[in-house]
Length: 91
Image (cartoon, rainbow, N blue to C red):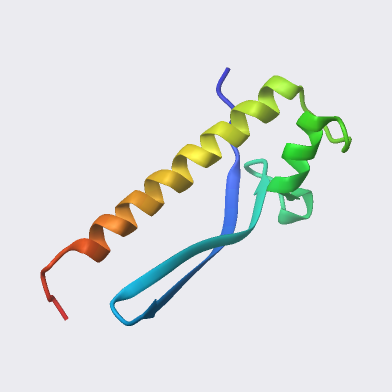
């Protein structure tokens, strides 16, 4: 089953002494064509799987959303890491 959704998240990159730290936080997910009023933090999806939070959707759908989201964030981080390791100075 394909589940569509939108993500909204904050990314912070701290650079110091030729090192960097990449952080993702304030991640919320909401259905397409819906206002952000229907957004849920990623923690709500995780708690739905644990049975500690009630929200619409089957657990399989919620698991699929979490896995897809995790895959996309990891891909974004890998792309960022690749860019940071690049030796070209294009500035």
